Amino acid sequence: MYSNQNQIFCLMGPTAAGKTALAIELTKRFPFDIISVDSAMVYRGMDIGTAKPTSAELKIAPHRLINICDPAEAYSAGQFRQDAIAEIEKIFAQGRIPLLVGGTMLYFRVLQQGISNLPQANKEIRAQIAAQIEKLGIEELYQQLQKIDPQTAAVIKRTDSQRIGRALEVFKLTGKKLSDLQSISPPQRLSFKFTNIAVAPLDRSYFQDRINLRFKEMLRLGFIEEVEQLYKRGDLYFDLPSIRMVGYRQAWQYFAGQITYDQMLQQIPIATRQLAKRQLTWLRSWPEVKWFDSASTNLLKSIMQLIDL
Image (cartoon, rainbow, N blue to C red):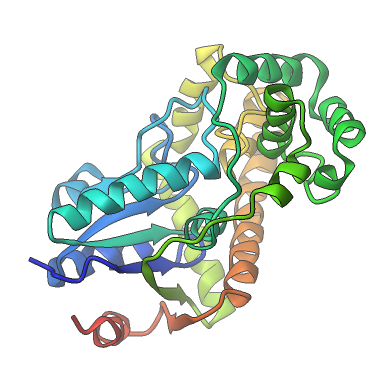
């Protein structure tokens, strides 16, 4: 049993850096329980394109906060923070140590640095906003947000349906701008001690090769068929956060007849590399993070020496 109920380890890194395999090895050597920090793995039925741990891997090292949402639902960073804190407390209560693993840097940020006290999600209003997005398009709703709350709109991408929808939802619930509520209620930090571990390959060409190989493996495992099943459901649409995930977005466009099969095959690895670049940009500005080369043959040993429990 682990006595220090304050220490949390965070294993961060870009997509295809090998975080899952590394985390599983660490659970064999330390009293770790894994919490997934991945905005794609929360969705059920989206397994291959998210590189979700296999059933065999989950038997060895169960992951919390995967398969908790239907793709038709929107899952926010605020919801993640609440869910993650609840799981952290359960892990500590069992005398074990939380190991948070993933590449969704926004989730890591709201967990470690806090988030403003905002109203909880409202399913009815979210459904109304989702219907508006499907009918009018995300650009129309972004323009609505610009009129209501130009300060928030200025820091949100015009295509970010999740954040645009959340800002409009908050306004509908409270009658107040999201930017005003965030200034009134500044983020509250947790009392836990976080050890941040970043893993990423130093060799750029090696990293690109890993991304390409991973995509080929996804195709072999049936990624296109996975997206086709989602497309055939009939209740999902392009602007949902789940469908706008890298890979799923391009495959969805293929099934919608917007791009060819060959264009899809070209675009997915490119979009994956762009995602990895954004993740690395987040990481480089992260305070107090320990960096490791994910291609190093001594990676596991080096990280074990850092943890040193």
